[in-house]
Length: 349
Image (cartoon, rainbow, N blue to C red):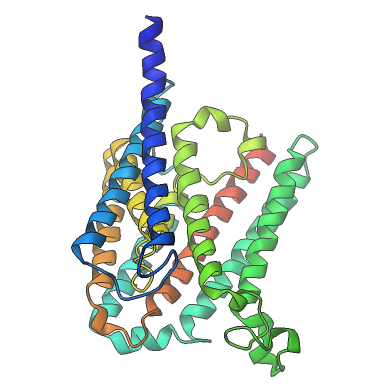
């Protein structure tokens, strides 16, 4: 019996370790031998070698997912459901917006391109979403501040997250330099666009950190919260962790790839999103929830196919990433609203 128990613990750990090692091997190959480098942007490579590389990444993530879910299965079974009308409305909005963007790309590529230009509706939409998310987090922080029993760590985390969203929004519009007609200080004269922002000093690296960081925060953490819900029983400590429903919108953002498709982190995020949605469908509490999750999974697959295999529709290779930068803040807004709901419940309790 002891050997069996030890084997049950070692097998999931072995799966996770094997998956991590395989992903690390791909990253090592990209760093040392790949023609594109670790973060190289290029037209998607569909050669046999790169298709095999994608298959390795996908199977590695499957192994990790099997290991994690096997580990969580030893405890109580936790199911996914849409708990409130607000959550349902947010997911409906995400599905509708993502569907609209994919259709727009197919039927009117010129407009799709125009909307993605600097100071266009997509950029300003992302800025407003980031500022809105920051504001909602501050409102949630104000609610938690009314209770002496709320976690100081949660308060600090919410304040930092609100600040991060605000800074990202300001960086997106170069701290209103263009709108105010300001000249960039000499300090910013040598960044890639000569504008008053910091991210253009290393645009490629910053973009990858932002997108993959959003994947971890908006998708991986909600999945872990679902699988290990007992860790988040105390709302005072679990307040800052994204609710599972946030992963649906986070997954939609992972399907907006073209010029960055060859980057391993991009494929990890996309395959991870698909695996997470499959897991949610398997663990849906009711048929209605399962249908919503399946629709999200189908939309992610179709959207990625649309953006990946219609390269002739792009006026600029990186246009679709501007839309990704709209969908990611939409996920942060959903997260912030979820936190506000939890803070409200905590205030009432």
